[in-house]
Length: 172
Image (cartoon, rainbow, N blue to C red; front, side, top):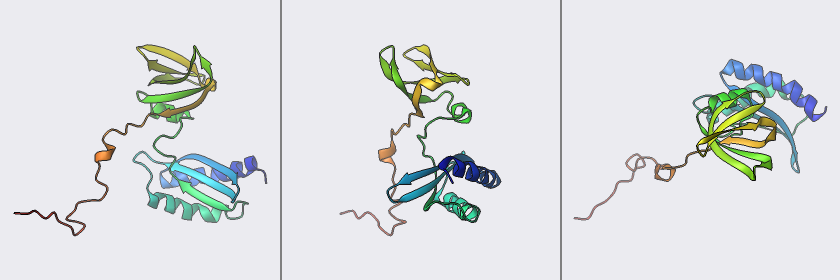
């Protein structure tokens, strides 16, 4: 079975299951790599996907796709900076800062950053440098949200020291 046929058969099964489990099916892909064929399924939900969500989806979809030809199956989140492809993606990111990489330079620029202020089937509108700029969607090689990483280095990933059985000793 060809790659396009395989994903065309598996994607509807994944969509039904995602709907039942309250997830958004982002993408189903079959990728050939030196180690084999990977069936990759990306799911999401508004509050973010957890490892438990991925495991539950994997266990539920496995019996439905085990008769198809692939070597490995991965179920994962598309990531916080996933590219915007669908109208749903654009709707979710209205008012957010996005990065647009063009296939070819327009007005001497190949990369733009700005606020996504609108979109339709043919184009998107970006507020950049105090002006609005319409960009044909087919001219964009990549459109993705800008992730603000400010303050991330201050997050304590180790948890509370007392919870870990450690306490700070002070000299008197």
